[in-house]
Image (cartoon, rainbow, N blue to C red; front, side, top):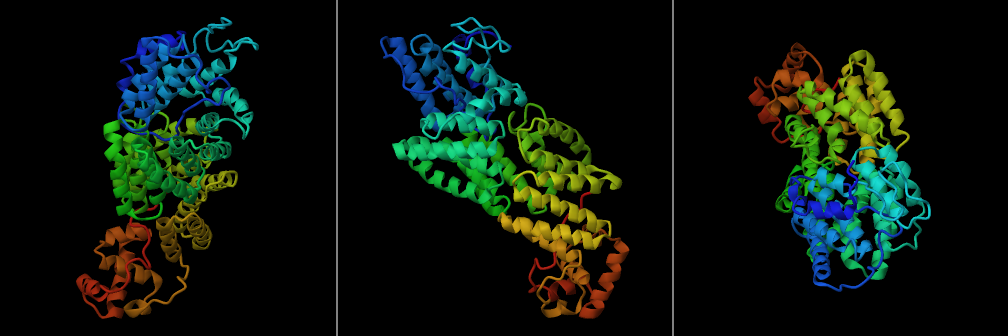
Length: 547
């Protein structure tokens, strides 16, 4: 750990802060919630260097909202170096904003070093393991830096022990900036209900005080908290509201973050074209401005939509560089969010060898207790990869974990995967129970695409659709009707057999009966006959099943 002071680090890293690679931004850490870290600037600008530092601070903050975030980080570090002796409160704010810029850029090195803990300039405490004396006026700020340094090093258990007690002491009457900073820290620590409460208070405070320029950023934080907690409709509503204001105020970076949140919500609703349009909108700003968080969320949104649409090979290829360790990793603090989708896409696309390593890495993250959904997602990932004799145990463990956390979408995905697993093993009655639960869960959270899939799997498991088949399919069984539709779409017997978990010979048998009952002699004749019959009534997933 580097023991230089923040002022020395800021002076030394001017010119280094632009190293962040343009990738993605998502759990925003404008981090304080500590008395003394925010508040009115003390002192006045009394010399040219002080004036230059204040101009750098104003420029950096503006660039953080609308400009290359690497440039913002450089300006903010320069401001911190210049203000450290004359106005330490302003210097602290500059460092915190620089950390936010480094996070946006995916620049782990700068983010980590901003919070490196050196000796206290007042009481002389040395290193991150030695706290300040209780009476030391620097104690709260230094404790905050020790906690955030633990975040940067991935030690969230230590970070939570240091930072969380202070979060519970923040009152509704606190200043807007303190509420927002505390909410952002709670979001980093995975304390999602607390994050939503603090950020909602910050939003109300900003509105009542007329601090309009702060509102879009607070909404972006709040929407992220709602998204991670599985509150998709609320996240989308806030993202839409924040986008209108961010665009009016010219805050393109904030608008990109909000657009990425909206894209993630749409990615479960089943409109691939809309997701693509929104991802393009995000990337138009994220790439030139180096917004690693926004780009990560946008790529994840597109991959999740592709997974939902059955384009599993494309989803796996898109997710691989976002989650796998290395220089191309999407974001040092966010990769874990996309791992469950990557594992599922790998299993369904036959890239199974790539998945176990990521499950092991995700297990380390899940053990940190920083995401309430992670234990259930981990069990589901392991179930997808498990041998037949362990799958049921792991799926039931995943469902038990879901009962302890909110998030109907993730819960429904586990019901769906388990139902597919049961159906493949010729246990249709149990499969239907799981698939019904999946269908209701997806409908509850507005996941239209996944609800359609669950409904198709439910019919394939023998559940009546509730409406009679119309036209030429009315004389067929549910299985025959499904095979007929797939053949009419151009699917081969091998593809249909993989989809339905039956042999190619069984497909051929059903197809002969379909031809006989419908009076056609070829696949082309069947396609012409069914040309006007609705596409999606009896279709399941166009991909192999897990497990």
